[in-house]
Image 1: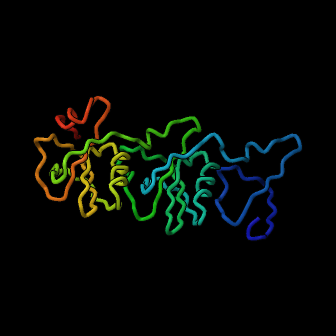
Image 2: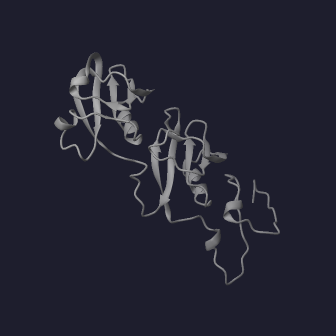
Image 3: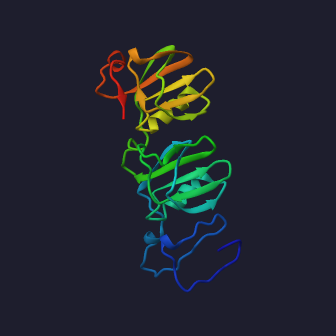
Length: 222
């Protein structure tokens, strides 16, 4: 059924042959002893959300819809759909055929409207795609000069830290008084910090670092 028009078909599409369409729905006639299971969306999945991120390069279907949950619903019908990118402003729903891990460069910060969703088995952890690290803050007006790989404008320091969480190559970030967020591939020791008005050095640490005191004595970088 499309736009209140009834189309009779001589065959039934598999789920992978379906076309996403907000104003249509598909009905399949089956034998009385059959079940509808093979025509239902895949239910043993959930989504890991990465707000304001975009996984570039894996798009294979685009649909325009005001309904963001509908974008993820469509993905559940396709075996090769592993996630979605949804743009909240232009309402573009992109179905993805590969996942961006947090370490790959095709996963990028996008504060222009995109949110990334990764489809994973219902019992799986989202930690591979959404991580939470510990951070050590040092007094303000100090900077770890150089090793910047991305400047973003997320609006708040919390968002700046979230972006560093999502990128494994991000070893530290600087939050400035002008709300600039500098993501860095290197984390300085205390002795390497440089006086810099209006900046604050925040370092990501890992399990082997026992405390923030010892963390600042260790370099981190590629």
